[in-house]
Image (tube, one colour):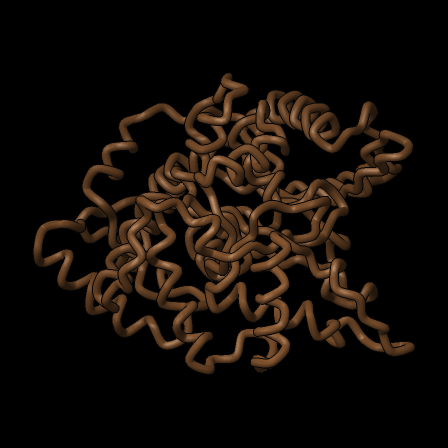
Length: 382
């Protein structure tokens, strides 16, 4: 049993999350390295600042360009599917998406019940005419209908996608372009259905590689009914010598032996402004336990009950989450407006931190197509 302090655990998690070096390369290979290091990148629609998948990749490599994603889709190195949420993943992990696809095809409901006739109709059109997006199918929308009243073709497209009959070829703007799976999937990709044990072992290895340490609860996050199987596989892999046990603050976790060696590496004390959907912060309970950092996205909270702001972003400094920042990119004016900065932990060299935070904001503004950072008055707390 390895006993780690919280500081050591945080360092390992930050290092495993690919914050351990500055990537200077502007190539596709650097972006693909980030995908392999992270395992997945979550997609989200909120655009107060650049969307989550762009933000997460840029946080690891400030030379990242959105055009890299188009190229990686075109070269069939990444694909879209559901991880714990909508995500982009390395194509090498395609086989492990088949279990969820089979569950959906067998009647497990994702968003909507399937409509076989419409699904067949939509699939036939794509087979004859090629890739389509939902707006290519005309539908008269009911007056005052809610967002859940998706047009029938869009529901069919999404269901076919969730079942694995369609894949996302690319995105136009933020709209998915759907194509038949057999036309997009590389021939060398293994498509045999993994056993439950293979699936659990894949999730365990991927999670521990990308997150350093983890429990069955962490690894099975938002995967209904999977925790007992993951727990069983963790014990088996530990007994086989594939995993190490780690204790942090008297809580037990597992780790890959080779990843523990990262603790010998030097960690740069750099400021990173993170996406709320960043791989490192997405599990809020884990974040509280290991980083003593309570975090919630308040865009879903009524305005009167918000403590920090509509879309506050976590601030990572070295191996500490030291605060959060509420800002918004006004792209037409090319201004990044900072509504509030919250410092929540004591920082030994605050002057040095402030200099690095200022530079991080300048870089973040440029990433968001802004030329200027404008602070609103009385905006620093703590």
